[in-house]
Picture: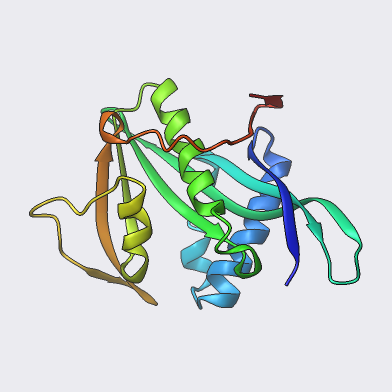
Length: 179
């Protein structure tokens, strides 16, 4: 297994950077999880905001690759101050390193400063525990599980005010500025 260091969360600014996020999504959702390209590439990306997780990767032979893309997340703006979290993906080799949590934290921080008051998502049913740990819950009366092609999904939500700051160190790159 490779060693990952210097994780950064980058807010994608330019359309040409979108290919980086799509490469991660294709590997996770299409190749690994079996979604069709038609479902994964749903035509909504141009209206969304995207973040990618990058890092330095030390390979087994000791070589180091810089700025390797290992994860992504997207925000779909909805009416009435609602942000939909979607397409959270982390490459299998980088799982267990808190990359997903860092992506969600960057997403939530952006929502807090951008006027969103609620975040909704559809979690793959087996992954709902991850979202529960980051402050999301299945809303009472909204606990219907539905089938989306390959995986069972369950709707989840949270309000921005109810998410507790997890006090984790994170380097967020927002439109080219490091915070």
